[in-house]
Length: 53
Image (cartoon, rainbow, N blue to C red):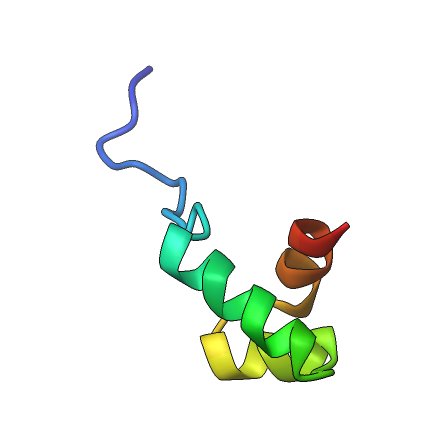
C-alpha cells in the first residue's frame, strides 16, 4: 500500500540567521524581554529563549 501524497508539514523557519543573532544581541542590550524580541523578529518566544540560553 502506498500513499499518493506527503502528509508531513514543512516548517517555515528552521534556523536563526547570523543577522537575527546580532539583532537579538542588540535587543538584549536594550533590556528587551524574549517575548518582545520574538514578536519583533517574527519568531516563537521559546526559539529566542533557547538562543539566549
